[in-house]
Length: 318
Image (cartoon, rainbow, N blue to C red; front, side):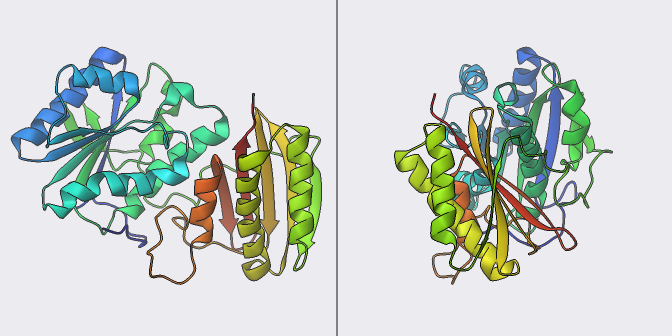
C-alpha cells in the first residue's frame, strides 16, 4: 500500500474517514473508544489502537489484544510528526493485505508536548492525513482529543478533521478546512544569539564545521551529531540543487534543543514530501524522508514567493 500524493481531500462517509472525538476525562475517553471498537468488531472489522500507554491500559482492561484488535507502541513516533504517516501505513498494512476493513484510534500525547513547534507540527500532521490517504484503501480513523487538557486547541483540530463525534453520533465538522495552507502558522523568530552562515556549492564541509562548533558548545557529540550532520548535508544539498544554488544556515539552541535552520529560494510543492517511505525502486526523492528519520523534529515552510525554510531540531543531552 502506498499513500496518495494527490490533493483531493476525503469526503465524509466514503473512502478514508477521519473523525475528531472531543472528550473530557478518562471515563469519557474509554466510553467513546470502546463504543468505536465494539462497533468495528460487530461489523467484522479490524482495529489498530495507537494511543499513549496510560490510555491503552484503560482499553486493554476491557478489550484484550487478538487477531482483530492490535495495540501498537507509539513511543518512537508520538513526538515526531514527520514519521507518523509512514507509521500508520505500516500499522494497517497487514489488515489491508488480508482484505479486511480497518479502523484506527490515534491520539497524540498532548499533555507531554515539549514545545509550540511540536504541537503545531502534530496538528499539521492531522491535516496531512487527509491528503495522504485520500486515494488509498478505505479505512476509518478516530482521533480522541481531551478538551480538559487544552480546550483552546479544539478549533485548530477541527480544521484538520472532516468529521466530528458528538454524543455518539458522527456529523460533518463545520471547522474543517480542506484547503488549509501549507502550514497553519509562521515560524517563530530565531532565538538570540544565533550564528549565520551563507553557503553555496563547495561549502558543505564548512557548513558541517559550523554545526559541529555549535553542537559542541551544548554537549552534542557522537552518533547524534553524525546524524545531524547527515541530515544537514541533505537539506543544504537540496538548497544548492533546487533552491537557486545557495542558502543561509542559522544555528541556535532553545528548550534543550539545537536548531539548524536552512533558507533558500526554492519551493516544495508537495507537502507530503519526506513523510512517506520511498519506494526501493525509485530514483532520488529520499533526502527529506531521511531527514525526518535522523532528527527529532522537522519544520518546513515553503511558498513560491518567499522560498523554503527548513528547521531541524535535535534534542540536547541532559
